[in-house]
Amino acid sequence: MRASIVGGSGYAGGELLRLLLAHPQVRVAQVTSQQHAGRYVHGVHPNLRGITRLQFCAVEELQPCDVLFLALPYGRAAAQIEQFAALAERVIDLSADFRLRDAAVYERWYGQSHPNPGWLADFVYGLPELHRERLRGARYVSGVGCNATAVNLALAPLVQAGWIERAVVDLKVGSSEGGNSFSAASHHPERSGAVRSFAPTGHRHQAEVLQALGAMELHFSVTAVELVRGVLCTAHVFLNRDVDEKAVWQLYRAAYGGEPFIRLVHERKGIYRYPEPKILAGTNWCDIGFARDEQSRRLVVLSALDNLMKGAAGTAVQCLNVMMGWPERMGLEFTGLHPV
Amino acid sequence: MNNFECPECGGGVAVGTAVLPGEILECPDCGVELEVISTHPLQLELAPEVAEDWGE
Image (cartoon, rainbow over all chains, first blue to last red; front, side):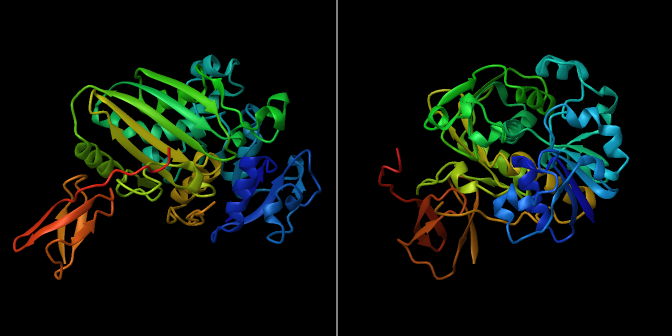
């Protein structure tokens, strides 16, 4: 299958390129970058040195292919979707442009009207754990928000079981979530060592969670910490019933026992007793654990993932595998490093 | 090989036919240690735990 990437010089685009170059069913045809057209891709993504001689091209040079991945800044994919859809049978967009089904909801959270609302209904939200059947044979798939994915996967079994009264979610995230553009806030003396509450309220990914899981009382805060890759979600879930931990185990096993990229992590000994993003770098795992407060109905659910992988490019490739009927782990087998 | 339900998490713990009373087994899911109390009938209980500092 011939795959091309539009916007391949960013972090998510580079991660996607790394995955697709190693995917046994895919041949990467073209990778675009307006800023770097004509340069070898390894000039921007040095981990690909010696792996490929591909050079970035301009978007105007794109040829038809079988699947087109879009890894553009917000708003750009939606503005040009007709042009892109004419080039490929299938389109997978990693941006937020087609994640929300309702244009009014998009406008409320993104502060601008949607550039192309007529296309919103054509895209399937690309989280296989929730939408696997709709993804099979889909033509247009949207990527997922990294923080939204950590929350969606952490809470989905509890929502489906009807156990949640309300949830307060705290996310600690790495600097690569901010993309490869820089600012005064990302200047090393300012960013290094920071524990920065950059979105104590109002983070856009909250909209994706409410869409995916349904209306609920959900509070959502995001803090940037000393990580390059990684998300740790700590969800304080106030349950509407008394349950013991064995029942929680059973609920999560029933929901995720067959999932290829979800592991339940709640161990009684050792160092890695709960999900920890450090050991997930470069993998498509989402680790999920929990701990019940003996004194109340609070259940703390923890999830960890690599924001560029399970939170972006990895899930996009997983979606391609589902769309094509290939094994979901194909091209995503990396198990991570320890120590790292 | 017998399959025993972990009393802590409900996961499956594989128990070999040659286990002896007093032997300590580990649940592959939650990592809890289980002590073989008897083999006929097979009976496992949570083993005593020693509190440890694991990384504050």
